[in-house]
Amino acid sequence: MGEFRVDPHVKVLDEGVVERAKARGLDAVVYAPHFTRLPRVEARAERFSDDDLLVVPAREVFTGNWRNRKHVLAVGLTDPVPDFITLEAAMAAFDRQDAAVLVPHPEFAMVSLEAHDLRAHRERIHGIEVYNPKHLGVHNERARDLAREFDLPAFGSSYAHLPGTVGEVWTAFEERYESAEALVEALKAGVPSEIYHREGAGHRLRCLAEVGHLVSENTWGKLDRLFLSGTEPTHPGNVAYDGAFADVSVY
Image (cartoon, rainbow, N blue to C red; front, side, top):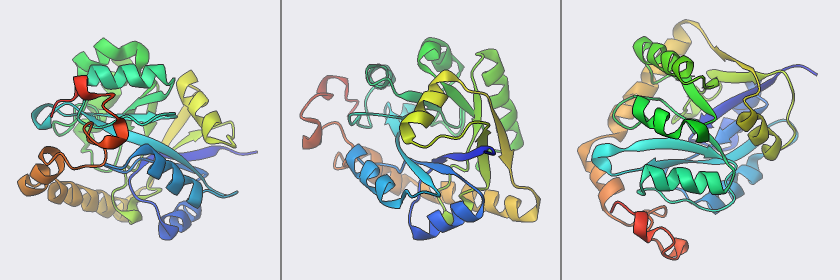
């Protein structure tokens, strides 16, 4: 049957991304774009899934306020969860929905769960990212230390914000999964996996490109528009959430 290769966190999805993922030997990608409500993510994931590539919808929820952001990746949600709510409220919502909860880029760039967050929510977390192209070596080493300290399964992803980065990193499982639900169950069960990434100058250039994108994405002007305007589709005040998260909104 062969191994099952997953890129567990990508931000981009179109025909070119699907083509690239297949060319890189991937069997699945987890699609979690920023500031996009779950129904839209699900519809796009379904549109681009086929017999050769499973596209799994997910949400990287931005908890907390701009000065204290904590990003958490939830796979297998059944109902929408907004951004800009407290970490505790987000974790409780994920738990109610029995989602797989993954920790992307721990202790990285002031947008991540830290050791004390992992300690507080250890029983609700199913994996921690120990390699992505935006990390420097020291970040990957620290992430591995945290995975060992809290005895959490490790995963690697491309964390691709640029189409060309998809498939630069993947997590491989021995068993094949034919549905998003099956992959979610594997993540929750901590099924053993191996992490791989491409090597050489091409990979290093892709990493540098992603770092450059991170810098441009996080300018003061864009942060002001994204985090403080209150008009994002995933803001808890959006009519789509019907006030369900009003009491845990941070804006």
